Structures are given as C-alpha cells and as structure tokens.
Length: 156
Image 1 (cartoon, helix red, strand yellow):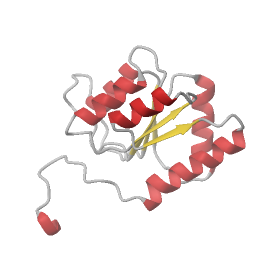
Image 2 (cartoon, rainbow, N blue to C red; image 1 turned 45 degrees about the vertical axis):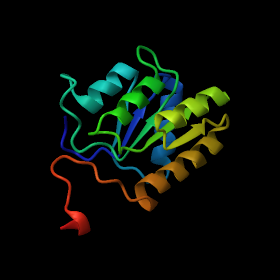
Image 3 (cartoon, rainbow, N blue to C red; image 1 turned 60 degrees about the horizontal axis):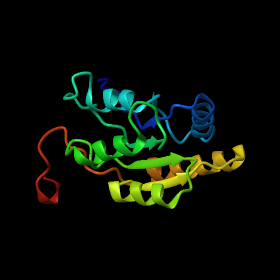
C-alpha cells in the first residue's frame, strides 16, 4: 500500500453518512490524510493488502468504523484488526447509529477503543468529529506500530 501517512481510515457504506463524516473531519483541519473504505471487504484490502498479507505501512493513526456494513460487518472488521499482531494497536473508534447495549458491549469486548453514536444534528456530529480528531491526532500518543523490530526498553 502507499507509504503516505494516512491519519484516518473511515469505513462507512452509507454515502450520506460518509459525506457528513468527511465534512465534519475537514471542518476543523485536525486531520490531514483520510482514506475511505465502503464495506468490510474493502477495509480488509486497505488494511491487509490485496493478498491479505501485506499490511498498510504505515498504518492509519485511527480507524473510524461503522458497525452495520455490507459484505463483512464492522464487528468482524474490528475483530480482525484486533486479532492481527500487525494491526491490533491501531485505535478503532466505532462510529454508528446503533444505541443497542448488545452492540456496544460486543464492540468493547472485541477491542474497540471508543464507541460513538452518530448524532442526528449535523452541528453535534461536527463537534463529535472535532473531539475525535483532536483526541486521536493531537492529544493521544499513537501506539508503537511495528513495521520492524520493536525498540529496546528505554527506546534505544
């Protein structure tokens, strides 16, 4: 895959929700590079390569993942991300319309770093994306994502 730094991978199948997400992320200029996958299979291709064995390098700093996706569900995408040692440290934020407690519990049990219910009003959605972008791009330190040997203790 590309060697450019993709800061956010957005996995969203609904064109209207995707447009809102992209507009909201770009509004506050917190995120520079955004890559989009429109279903679970496409998300796997982006993250793991066409051959399913060539992970994206460097990986995205965060994945915004819809729960209800065609072909492969968002929950299955999340499980695969967290099961693979090459991608398990990538923060995954579930961004979904589902408020069902079973969905929330299943996502956290599978390793989601956050679960955000999409607000109905655009301005609330913009604010939610501003906070997500600010946290994952500015405040949080990205985890060590191995593309080679891990650094020695103490960083040497």
